[in-house]
Image (cartoon, rainbow, N blue to C red; front, side, top):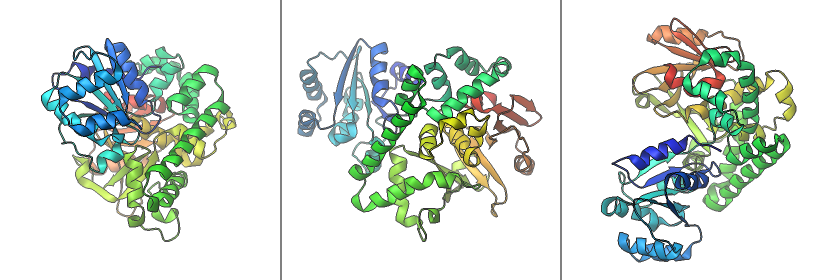
Length: 433
């Protein structure tokens, strides 16, 4: 299996301003595999330490944070010699050892020659709770489930992935039916590495569902194990409500759909926990399409998506038979799977931040509004080939938007100020605008 993230890690390795790297991401998106694979192909030696229930490492880091002493202790623990130039040091589940997190400051200040990569399933939660290490002393990298091009590569369709990477849309259009069939598989399987690997081995949809059910069960166990006891029921209710929230025509998150009389303040802590551990993507509404979009965030209005389209299709119990029914999978419960798919791909595109827009009366909506750094790009998501875009055109005219994007089942086409990008190629959007 190949992860594009390896390229980012190699750039980190080569950087003269390299700092200890923290990899964030939901449980089971492949953080441990990525770190080990990076070490295997890019270093002569790997020094791997799992901090979970590791009393020896807790004792080592609690004593003091002198870097030379820590290196000596790690060498004794792993029975290996650490050469700064050729060894990758991996701290896995680092959130279980707060002192080890704090030590990254001293590695950066006093021994920057060491290459250190860290990860943890609940790292985002630990950082948000104020685990002590100074901002600016570490680099961050966010890892997500496999993107659609990575899924293609896992299924031994490297040439199909390469067409999208090169932006050869003319050739891709020739084979669009292949892309559409593969996209159906992706909607069902998603990008969780274990599910993708199993599917690549035997194309067994039932096995994929069992794996997804186990992943979802492990998330539920995390709720009970790591969420403050008073918040566990609210986190469960919030999590369970997401499919029904996305099934609505207007996908704005409504607390009242969790239970009658629910208020935002009752669920804010639970929502923050889900965001911090990478299980959900929170996409805020903006009040105006001006740069930077973050300055126009409406903090009270947002859409909520989960980490993976395959997990969402599992939560909604979409059956394998839907795959065989034309393009019905793309329009299942009001196209929610399609918006989920699109935001999942956008999250893997560096340099893009995603929001959405509605007018004050909620009579007009743009599915996603993208901050591409130097431009605001409205993006409308169409689950079918029906390309009516009245809201998009009215929005572009009103705010004098030079380029709007629509993603749909239709072919790549640019006409005046409107660009249609096929759903299977939405991950290439930055090269199109």
